[in-house]
Length: 240
Ligand code: CAA
Image (cartoon, rainbow, N blue to C red; front, top):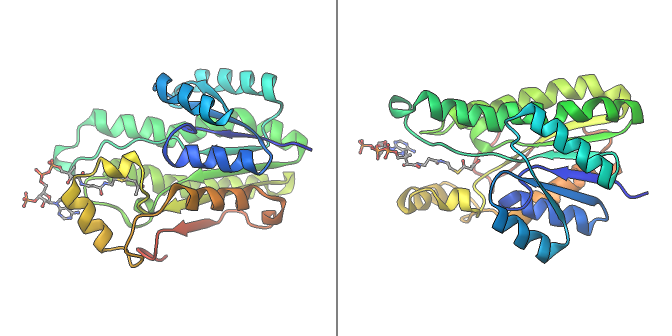
C-alpha cells in the first residue's frame, strides 16, 4: 500500500529534504510552496515530486489545495506542517505587521493545513501529523517574539491533537530542529551566526537531512505509540 504525504513548504530548505526522504521511503509526495515558482519547477524537475502552490495562511486556499492533491494522489495519510517564515526584530522594533505575518503563516498555517485533513484521517483510522517546530519555541530567542510564540504554539497543537486523534489511529508529534544549514539561518547576520554556532556543542549547524530522517521515523508504522511527543534535534544546544 502506497501512502500519500503532504509537505508544506516542501520544495526548499528542510521541507525539500523531507519531501525527498519520504519519496525515497516509497510515499506519494506532494510538496507545497508559497511563491517561488522557479525553485518549485527546478525541484520538480530534479526530484519528480509534484509541487502545488498555495498560501498556508489562507484557509480556503489550503482546503482547495488539499482537495486537489487528494484528487490527484489519493487521500493524505501523512502531513508535515513545515512551512514557516521569520520576520526577526527586537521587540521594541517589531511591528504589528511582522507579528501578524509570522502568526498567520507559522501558527494559523498549521491549523489551515491539518484541519481540512482531519476528518478524512479519522474516518480512515490512520494519520500521521508531524509539525516542524523549533528550538526557539522551546527556549525563546532574542528578536523572535513572534516566531518563538508560533513554535511554542506548535507544541500545544500536537499535544492536544495527540489526545483527540489517538483512538482514531492518528498520531501528532513535533520536531524541534536547532540551527540547520538552510537559507533561513544563512540570512542571519554572519557575526550572529558564528556566535550561535559557538553555542552548539556539536560545533556545527545541522543538515536538513538530519531532520528529514526524524520525520520518516515519526511517519512510520514503527512510531505508532509515539504521540504528543517532541523530538529535539539541535546538536546539544538546548535540553528540555
Ligand atoms: N542576545 C542579546 N543581545 C543581542 C542579541 C542576542 N542574541 N542579538 C543582538 N543583540 C543586541 C545587539 O548586540 C545590539 O545591541 P546594542 O544596541 O547594544 O549594540 C541590539 O541587540 C540589536 O540592535 P540592532 O539595532 O543591531 O538590531 P536590529 O534591529 O538591526 O536587529 C537582529 C538585528 C534582527 C536582531 C539580528 O541581529 C538577527 O537577525 N539576529 C538573529 C536572530 C535569530 O537568531 N534568528 C533565528 C533565525 S533562524 C530560525 O529562526 C530557524 C530556527 O528555527 C532555529
